[in-house]
Length: 259
Image (cartoon, rainbow, N blue to C red; front, side):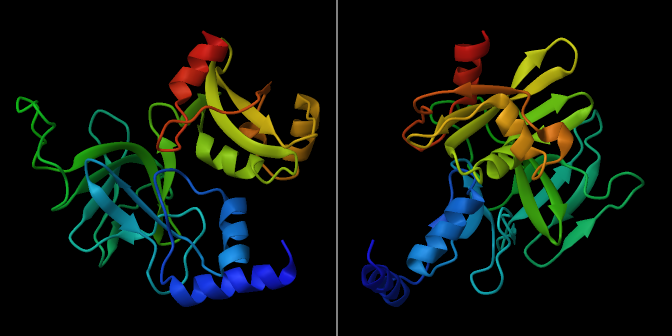
């Protein structure tokens, strides 16, 4: 794109569009940066789902932390609890404040995200026998509170990889891998492993004309990633299938490659 066209596009976006929002899936840092280069807008990342509407958001005005989903919206209560028999509370908060239950070993501890608010749904269609509890709803996502904002680490069922005693966020691994110059798209999954419980596998779509081996990926990753999060397996594909919402069905990927 010619420089004058880039300048025109950015000027129009800044003048005609007040706000640009990202949602439905994790926002990779390269996409955030490229979007700002093209439009002049810093995408507003927020968190929600069909059953609860919008729950957390970065500020409309003020600094937005890449990868974070901000704080609860007005009227919304959230809580992060440990995945244990007593659901030990780590933090709970509203749009005004977040109270941290600082106990030994719980600082920056991840846990299950619970949400309560006026937009939380009452029941599923044609399933009145399964009404929602009036208490907080379990969103099914793992989250952590740090740097005064909330971070979504992924779906508890598929995005949290338990390997060798570590809990690894597949979304965090994907964010790092998308910065690799040869990678166009990536989905990270936890494949069964007899020794470690699960192993980190990267399903990768390469950029046109590029190549990549597992040893090359590991060599690059050692300079950018925590050692235990580095993929130990690499699967190259023509494209990564996504649904109409643009999301990857990781359970299907696991069945396809590791059944």
